[in-house]
Amino acid sequence: MTDAAPSAPEPRIEGHCAPGFEPVREAFARNFAERGEVGASVCVTHRGETVVDLWGGLADPATGRAWGRDTICVVFSCTKAATALAAHRLAEQGLLDLDAPAADLWPEFAAHGKGGATLRMMLDHTVGLPALRDPVKPDCLLDPDYMVERLAAEPPFWTPGERTGYHALTYGFLVGEMIRRATGRSLGQVFAQEIAGPLGLDFHIGLPASEEPRVAPMILFRPPKDAPETAFSREAKTPGTIPNLFLFNHGTWASGGVNTPEGRAAEIGAASGVANARALAGMFAPLASEAGPRLLRPETAERFDRATSATHLDATLKIPTRFGPGFMLAMDNRARGLDSLVLGPRAFGHVGAGGSLGFADPELGLSFGYAMTKMGPGLLLNPRGQSLADAACASAAAA
Figure 1 (cartoon, one colour):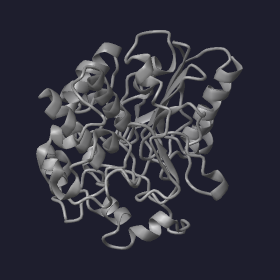
Figure 2 (cartoon, rainbow, N blue to C red; figure 1 turned 30 degrees about the vertical axis):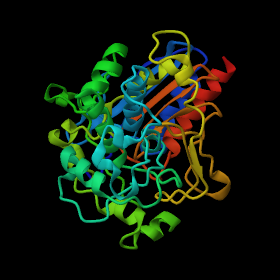
Figure 3 (cartoon, rainbow, N blue to C red; figure 1 turned 90 degrees about the horizontal axis):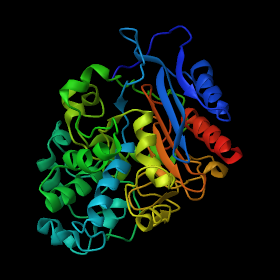
């Protein structure tokens, strides 16, 4: 990742914004003017129609390359929602069972008391494998066979199903291996064939080399030295804790590999998805409105906004969290001064490290996507993404 972006002239914002959704364009412009946005895209669909599709700024500050209509970037944990949709699609086809023991497909996974663990527990972050204890090799995330073998042999941090702890990077290898064993295909192949292809999404889990020229490299967020200490940052300093292992025992992909062709070609189902706002909104659009193409049966999608796990103290993030089967739900922790994701009561989606966001709100008939190159602060959503989500939801409610 590059460490900083040089100053640039006021960016040109391109695309279109339908009448009634002008607050989204205004919030997007304010992000550049007031919140340090460098390059980004935002997209909103409402009742099956694309009402906002905007982009602006720089895709690459080092060269001055502008963010174009088809610029793409790593969207980090928004990839988890893509992985979840692939799993749900296979479940509808009878190839996966969310509530059967994972060891039925993956016998090695039963080691150390994990015989009763299920795919649903993997999806909602209760399976008990948020990190690996023993040191990993530097390129571990580029080697799925290595990660799968390590996770199968790892004792859980808690009895599967009994606690919630965000599986920031292990999630993708767990769910991805279930998909591979059910189909004989990799996660990236299944997602392309079952989700991205049918919906026409510019969303890749394992980016082809041919698409590399369109990529905007990520700009690392560096917290200021005087940043206030949090429960997460305190525990992260203690070797062997889950926050410490999550931050410091996952190899070198996040610190540099993410900005390499090899890192973007890797199928890291929790983090390496490459997309833009249009693809994120498009992925959630069939789940937000009956208009347009169907992705899953209505009875399947209707369950996505139901919390299958929730806690006042996430074992990894050390804040209250709520998850559905592969999706983040609203987490309004503002009254406690903690990181939040403020969405409607029926909304579901996912944030990505640094601020990217995709979600569906069936109550409003709205889907939303935001992708950017400059990462921001916080464990959940930062003010840039939240301001856009707030404007989109308010506009849809008033329409």
